[in-house]
Image 1 (cartoon, chains in turn cyan, orange):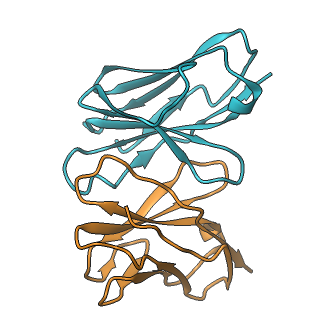
Image 2: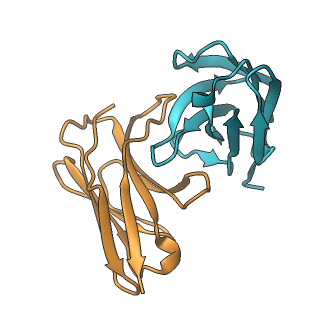
Length: 114
Length: 110
């Protein structure tokens, strides 16, 4: 199984809502990532988890709250988002041994904030 | 990580080889060159990576110049399904980050 599964595929939320994005992999990878991608732009790294611990936070606003409950799951909790947060949110995983740069990406969650 | 420079867009005829260049003139000895592609509305897909030797897999070939300051990704027989944005990324061995640049939008024409 070389898939990273993200749910939901599409999400529409209001600025006062709380929602969560989910990501799952069963490749035994111990590094997991969240990226944000605006239309016609490259993916931007948000967070990196290594062995279920947050290792990189790219100065992401606190309205985005990541969580890694176990080695297979990664969540992104969303609260009080702004319309400019509308984007494609991508999850990825990779092994902790080289080539660590070989990331496996999910298909993403297309988020619209109204 | 070293900066990469890629052409904004390229075209290639179906069935021909697509050669995508990437400049990484400030690359250091422990930095790998990775290539990914992203087909519209999908997540990026790993293609290939290399350090200094040329590499080939079922998807593509990677040619790295001897001074390592540039590389070329070769898709030997391009199909319409190869239309995508191709990202060349330089990454330090052991680094936790993978940072995407602007990429090259490759269009395969029938």
